[in-house]
Length: 275
Ligand code: PEP
Image 1: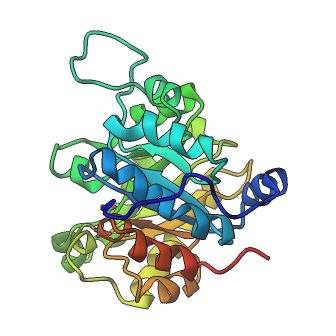
Image 2: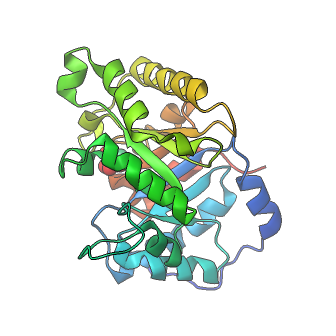
């Protein structure tokens, strides 16, 4: 990440008001990059390199950098009027308190975040975070005025045991608080076995999961715009267009392939160009 230099004076003159208005529309795709625990100061140049493709894209581009880069990344993007949004990868549910190392949603917002990931499988499984905690963090995000992106997904064992539907249904009912009604939020379907493995579900497995999630959200959250439902797990430049073409896929959550500007650019471009 971040091996190239950049020019702070952006060559493209754009109409930001029009662009912002357009990209707030709920039916445009979201392409989000989760940098996980990757990136030192030079990673800021990766974001600058994807600014131009993000401006040209039909999609809303989001980066979830490590917390240490959030403020600087946000300031750097603001300085060039970039349409790229930044978000936190996690938050605590509390507003403040004696939680050494903890970061509240308000702190993320103060550092420039507009969004936050909650319930990523690396936290659900690696750190044993239960659905109930994910729901509390989601409430924290709403309290701070952040748009939560709630990750759900089954393990390989659960899929092989025929439990995918039950797991997704449980994740949705237990991780999504009622307070989300009418609010801006997204659900990312990330099969645990597809994350960082190079294995992706078949098209029909993805369409089936998307349809279950959509039906569940429609039945439960009757007010407000339909949330975006993203697919995540081994998204690469060569499969992004196909994944985005699948019924019900409103965007992509990208891990490893968001770390290199050239790969992430191709994924952003796969969403199509702004008219
Ligand atoms: C992720 O961690 O959210 C993810 C989708 O990772 P990867 O793209 O590397 O599989």
